[in-house]
Length: 117
Image 1 (cartoon, one colour):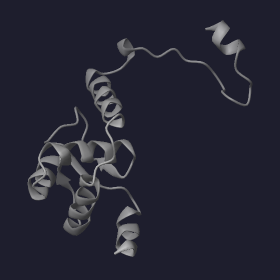
Image 2 (image 1 turned 45 degrees about the vertical axis):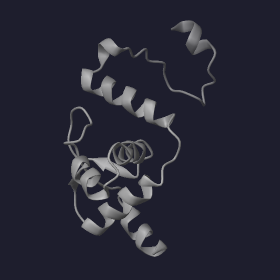
Image 3 (image 1 turned 135 degrees about the vertical axis):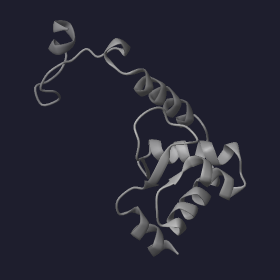
C-alpha cells in the first residue's frame, strides 16, 4: 500500500484503500461484471427505443416490460444495461440487475428527451 500511495500526488487522492471482492456483496460484483461486459458491446439503436419507451411511460418499469414493449428481445436488454452503465437509467432496487429490475430515467433526462422531440 505504501508503494501505491508513494506514486500518487496529494491532489490525486486523500488516501489509498485496497478493496477486493472479499469486501463487496456478491450482487455488486455480478453487476460490475455485467456492466463491464456491455461496455464492449457496440452502441445499439435499441438504446433510443428503450429511452423512448421509458420516457413515454413516465414511470418506473421493469427491464422485462421494456424488452417486451420494444419487440427487440436481447438487444433491448443489452441496451438497458448500457443505459444503466452510462447513468441514463437508474435501477431502483438493490440486488442483481436482471429482467425483473425496476428502472427509471435519470433525473433531468426526461426533460432533455422531450426537448429533442
